[in-house]
Every structure is written in C-alpha cells, then in structure tokens.
Length: 251
Image (cartoon, rainbow, N blue to C red; front, side, top):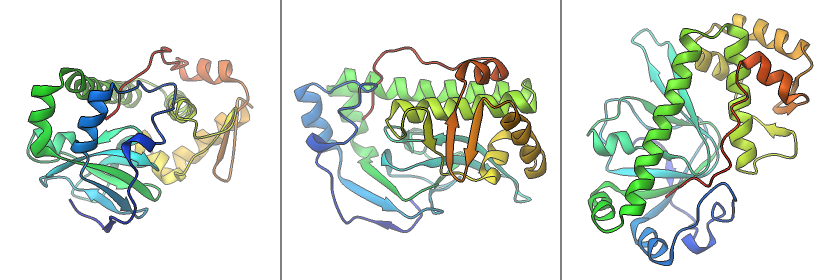
C-alpha cells in the first residue's frame, strides 16, 4: 500500500451507512459477524493520493465506504488512461490480492474512507461463507463488465456517444447510492479526468462536452451535473444503462 493513510475513526459494521441503501443486499446475522471480524481497520486517504500502485503487492483489499476513487494505468511517457471510477460499496485491491501484483493504480479523487480487509483471511471467507465468496466473485465480474463497456466506448462509440454514455453511467451509479438529489449529482472530477477516461485530448473533450450541453439533455455547472432529459441523453449514448432493479452485494 502506498499513500498518506490515516486510521483515526472507525465505523462499526452495524452502523455502516451503506447497509440501508435499497440497491445493496443485506447481510445475514452470521455474515455480518464474519465481516466484523474480517474488517481490521478503516483508512482515510487524502484526495490526489494513489493508495494502490501498479506493479506493487497489496496485503489488503478495500471497500470504498465514502468518497470517489479511480483506477488508472500510466504509460512510460506519462500519459494516463483512467479505467473506471470507484464509488461507495465498490471493492478495490482484489487484483493485487489474487494476482500478487497490481496491474493498475488507484487514486483518491476525493477524501476517501476505506474499509480494510487482510488478504490472509480471504481463504477463510471462501471456505466458510460461500455466499460472501459468491459476492466477491460477483464484484469481480461486475468490474469486468464495466471494463467491457469501456472497451466498446473506446473502440466503437463516437466521441459524443462515449461522453454521453460515461456521464449517464456515472450519474446512474451515483443516484443508486443516494449521492445526489433528484436529477442532480455533484461530480468530483475535472474535464482532465474525463478526457483521461474517454481516451481523448482535453481540447477534444471540451468541444464534445459543448456539443452535448447544446442538446439541453444535461447541464453541468461547477461540479453539479443535472439530467434534464434522460431519454434524450440515452439516445445520444446509444444505451440508457438502466440497471436491473435487483439488490447487489458488497463486503
């Protein structure tokens, strides 16, 4: 682990602010007791700090409790590709736990609170709690799904389509987690983050955003992103990315 982490403050699992969210499944009593033992710490990371780094080993995996982060890879010449964004309830560091070394880095986009789990107890989870083991497998599969969509955007969607799709997907995820008001979300990322996620130059991203804003389907002032016409935005994106109304797991 790399970064300026602090361990002041601890949220008991019974008081986890994520548990009441309707999009997340509830633990059974025995699962909750295990997760309480599985969690060994709570880490607070400053915005801008990469707490997991490419080509390093991680003895821990983490669940985002509060804040936003992003996964990224750096090329030798300093160019950055943002792979996707991590929001509350998302797990990060599983790759470094299973594959020995991280193939990407993870940076805090905002001040971040992470639940810390030791990789040494992962086998105990898989051997004693198959439902939680399935949950981790589900989370890994969902990560693969997000990467699939990202690859389709980079390979086949036009600049306007991929911009609309990414913004709609992030808006949808944030709304599920009750991170905004009806129709609005406060996005913490800059146009440079968006450009690095879209695989476009900052100038191209700026021009594409102006085209998207001109449709009146959305507005984006300061950090406040608002969807005025979801159907129109989905039509531009080529998909409304509406998720199935089923509860999803988290650890």
